[in-house]
Image 1: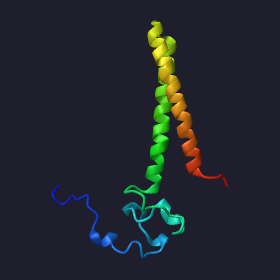
Image 2: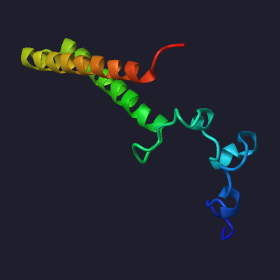
Image 3: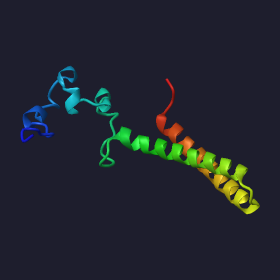
Image 4: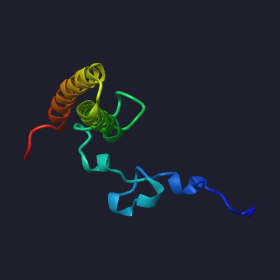
Length: 114
């Protein structure tokens, strides 16, 4: 397949910011959720990743800590050795404390409910 190419043509990407939102092509990535905000509410200059991606990292870490905490608690409850059970209980407790902190971060970043 010599004619197959996964690159966007440059002509399709030029001038996308000058078009109205209803004229932009969603499939080419010319419209995203930050276009709905006014320019004074946007915060894009902080890092190389867009804001929704950076916000999802905190949620991902929260759910990873929650999952490993539950796994540690279940493993500790089923352990036959008391040293293993204590170690798993400590790990579950530490993960739950970290989860509570990440939950507070997620809640603070999501802002007030309308």
